[in-house]
Every structure is written in C-alpha cells, then in structure tokens.
Amino acid sequence: MKEIHVIGIGSGDPEQLTLQAVRALAATDVFFLLDKGEEKADLIRLRELLLARHARPGHRVAVARDPDRDRTAPTRGYAPAVDDWRRRRADVYERLIGEELADGERGAFLVWGDPALYDSTLGILQEVHARGTTDFTWTVIPGISSVSALAARHRTGLNQVGRPVQITTGRRLADTGLPPDVDDLVVMLDAHQTFARFTDHDLHIYWGAYLGTPDEILISGPLTEVADRIRTTRDQARARKGWIMDTYLLRRLGPAGVEGPQGASGPGSGAARPGEAGDVSGESGDGSASADGPG
Figure 1 (cartoon, rainbow, N blue to C red):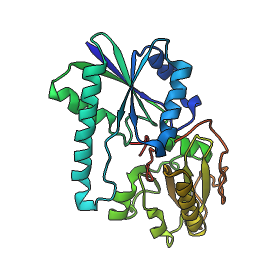
Figure 2: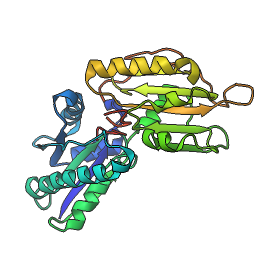
Figure 3: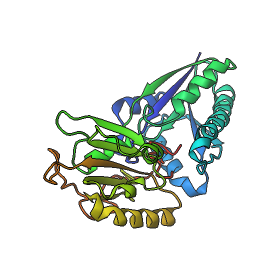
C-alpha cells in the first residue's frame, strides 16, 4: 500500500514546522512539488530548504508543472473555473502517485499553512482516490496557518471575549458584505482589497503580507486611516515580487470608538514594517497568490 503525508509547513517561516511535521519529513521517500513558474520560485525554495534540513538521505523529489488557473472569472463563472482547475490538478496528482511512488513507500505533499484551511490538496486527493486507478492511504499533519501567524505577529487574539470569529474570502465579502453578528472577520484570498469598501464603518484592520518571510509587511490601525496605505503598499509589493499573499482581520470597534478587549498596539500599528520576522518566503491567504498555500 502506498502512503501519502499531507504536511502543513507553516506560513513562510521554516521555524514554524511542528515536531510531527519534522518526523513526517524524515520518514518520507518521495516528495511531490508543484512548479508554479519562475515568478513564484520563492515558494519552491522554501520547500527545498525544509528538505535539506529535515529529509532523510536518499529521498527523491518529483516535480510537476502546476496547472494554470483562471483567477479572473466573474462570480457566476468562479465555481466552474475552480472545478476545471481541480480536475487538471487531480490528473497531475494521479500521475505522480501512480508513477513516482512504489508500493510500500511514503510520498508527501508540502502544503503552505494548514491543509485544512482554504487549501485544495485534501479534496483533490479524495478525488484521485475515488478514481480507483491507484490505491493509497493518506495522513494529515496540521500546520500553522497564515491566520494564526497574522494574529501572532500583531500580538492580538482572533476573537473578543465571548464573541464569534468568522473566516471568509474576499470574493464572499464582496458579494455579501459584512456579517451583521460577527465582530471579528478574517479575510483570505482577497485579490481586490475588498476592505476598502468599508471605510465608512468603525473597523480596525490587522493586515499582513508574506507572513513569516524576510519580505513580511505588517500594517494595523483604524481602517479609515490606513486603507489607502495598505492598498499602496500592497500594489508596490506585488509589482516588486510579481505575486503577493496577504491576509487580514477586520474588527468592529466598541460603542465609544475604542477597540474591544484585544489591544490595537501590534508591531505593525499604523505603519508598514517589512522584514520584521521569520526566515523565509511566501500564496496562501491568496491576496493573489493562495489561502494558505500558493494554490
């Protein structure tokens, strides 16, 4: 029987690997890497660094080209575009597992952030397994998501006392607006900076890009005051690197315009601070790159 490890590798800092992930890396025979092109070579380089540090001697690496995905489809065409991309990616997974992994061996996919949060790997593996062309089992090793990294870098919690927190996408936020009964809203996969539509609300924003990497940028503050700065900083960063991955938390302010129990004085308060933490690089939280992983 073939065995697959789906390993969450964190949001960009190689020190975010859990001990369970380190053990899984050391027990793997074949690592499957998807090449997203030279523009996103940083994403491959981090994985290669992790293998150099933690994979056992004699391991093999199988690389395949990641299918292109239409990220410009309008809302009505979004689901069909994603379905088509997932089918083509499933074809790639099926070939890799069938041709590159022998019975009795362990293979691994290294997933940006946490495999359970806005990442396609688990769903695609289920589809490949259902096809029945190759038999395998799989194990999931959780990782530190960009959401957890965002809160940690801003030194704040994700929720206020006794209040719910919701995680959503930029596309859904644009379609449905702010949920009326949620005070803390985490937004991922927002290529269009949808937060800028809500500057007339009493909101505080905690924004982060390339979290855990040398290129990390943090900005926080009242949305009405920092929205333009975030948009400008984001556009400049994307132009410089060719891609970006960012995530943000929107928090409703209290009745007196004062933030709730969690303070607003994170390391990114009011200003952009590149390269403050981490060791290496970043698609998940796909501001335009993925949610927790570049795809």
